[in-house]
Amino acid sequence: MLLPEMPEVETLRRGLVRAAAGQSITSIRISDERVLKRCDSDDFTERLTGATVRAVNRRGKYLLFEMVVANVAPFHLVVHLNMKGGIRRFDTDVPQQKYECVRVGLNTGSVLVYTDMWTWGDWHLDEAAAFTQVADVVSMGPEPLDSGWSGALLAERLAGRRGLIKAVLLDQKVVAGVGNIYADEALFTAGISPKRQASSLDAGECDALATSIASTLETAVRCGGSLGEYVDLDGNPGTYEPRVYGGKGRPCPLCGGPLMKISVGGRGTTYCPDCQH
DNA sequence: ATAGCGCCCTGGTGGC
DNA sequence: TGCCACCAGGGCGCTA
Image (cartoon, rainbow, N blue to C red; front, side, top):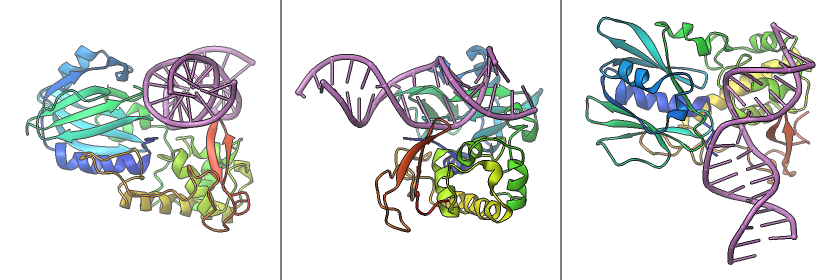
């Protein structure tokens, strides 16, 4: 599993700030057009070549490259890694990588190589100059690491929502950046069963869940992402070890009982039936 | 408006 | 041991 979620995307973003911010793009090479979900590859290449990366932002699981070029209005390069996308930086123009889809040459001589085994990732351009106006992120929920995040805000986002809390947490309109790994982790830490109706959480439970979402993500960012298939821009793996995710049958870190795996909203969900209610 | 589905894709797994 | 059907999984677009 690769599963880039918010901490993995944030780790990549920090690397990209160092590698690409202030640099200009000297070349674009598309090896697999399937990741250009909504744009023409010639247009994509033409508009990016010669443009400068003014900033690298993140919203939820999206990377937003703020692009500027002479005589053209600023725009955004929008990248979503989906399930299997990854970006590596190389000092020189290395041979084509396995599952390579997009290669970005920078004026420093280094290259950014995007690989994506499933080609589910999404690279496209957005006309918006301000990143809050990028079409993909306008209806997205709050960032759990922003100062405004709280149990009250989570409660507000959950109000009137039908469905099970695990499934609702994965909806990016409710909270930005939470995916399958960190949803399971946050629910475990808060002691809340993934099978609870989202609307049944009381104020105290919303507080606990909001806190656990933020602390889980914060810890994972500090670890440079989760341990496993994911690697950062320079190929270094993350060190965050999930306590329950992927641990079916392993002893619960709290009570020692076996962790269970069930399906919630069509997603694999690991939890402790004794510690989560 | 919102919820529930199928679809996209390929490596790994489990059954025989 | 080999083969193959099956499964995971985020987000989008369609339907009800």
